[in-house]
Image: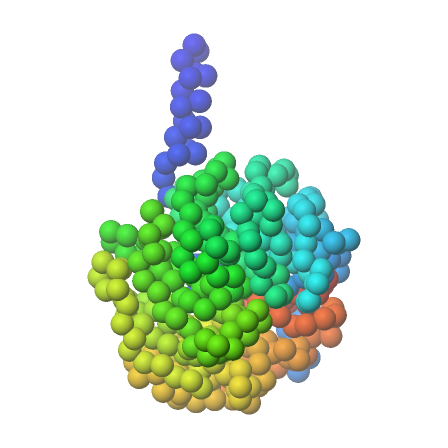
Amino acid sequence: MKYLVPLLLLSLLLSCTSGEIEIHEWRGVNRTGIYPDGDLLKEWPENGPGEIWTVDSLGRGYGSPIFVDDQFFITGEIDSLVVLHGFNLKGEQLWTTTLGKEWISSFPGSRSAPTVVNGMIYVGSGMGDLYCVNSKDGTIVWSRQFSSDLQEMFPLHGHSEAAVVSGDKVFWTPGGKTHNVVALNRHTGELVWSQSAFGERSAYNQGNLIRLPNREIFVTFTAFHLMGLDAETGELLWSQEQWGVPLEERDIGKGDTHPNGVLYENGSIFYSSYDGNRGVRLDLSEDGTEISEIWRNPEFDGLMGGMVKMGNYIYGEATTTQYFISVNATTGQISDSLKTGRGIVIAADEMLYYYNQRGVLRLISPRDGKLTEISSFKITRGTGQHFSHPVIYRGVLYLRHGQVLMAFDIRG
């Protein structure tokens, strides 16, 4: 019996410091926008799939919910403060925690989708602050007030980022001259490394992590550059300048908006930025230290709707023409298009879900780049802009519009 307590303590310590970590993050595994659910409806009723429940007390915001087991977590702005909610899958609130000041200027409301790792929630505010919260009861474990101690400049519409986690580090892009991109110890919030990079504003970007055999690379945008940083040391490995706006015309709100995260697959990086170089494919060297541009398509100019890659085709919005398009990943050429308006794309069970900025949700079939609209319906609940990315979890489609979160049954 005298050995039981030490053994239990040792077991607990090992469980916290070793083994694989389980990451639940914005736009699913590796931020691909593709959800693993199967056996989903291939066609919807005329008025859309059945609504299971609605929550209408989130507070203002655009951040998507993140699901872990039988719970989900989502933020909202209430009385100028960012509030993190914990719910069960019935839409019943389990707890709520007020974190700090939220962005209430242009497009007021919460922006950050949480990242959940082994029971810890990492979530930011429009002020650029970062919080670590216990998922069981909403207790704040630590916080970093970048808006006051590290951040030197704000983007025009507030900070928007979903934290990236690798091992014991959490990555964040405060922007500014000194601490432009940082890595923190995810357990304590202490600074691990800081990279000044180009000293620019953050660019509303949802960063991503490229995992190579001998290196991990944190990829993010700041105002006028795409950058790849060594995740272990913070070294700036490579960058690509964004030329959406000429050098002499650049200013806050002009050429500095790059919300779409990159996709990485088999040695290639794909991105689409209306305010930057538009649609681009870069090939990454084996050691991750160099990039080479393979193609650039000015018509593939998504602003903030994300993109998904299925087979040899990339699907996303064309902001200028307001079409939904498919792009050949090898050549960069547009294969097909639908007149849909600007919007957001995710995928599941070999189908595409496209939610446009007028509130219409479409179910689209892609077949080797050929697009066929199958069904659609209009979201009538909620107020404000239709900017939130839909999420699919256990056969249910979740969609936020302002203070409202809706759950739709799309199981076949």
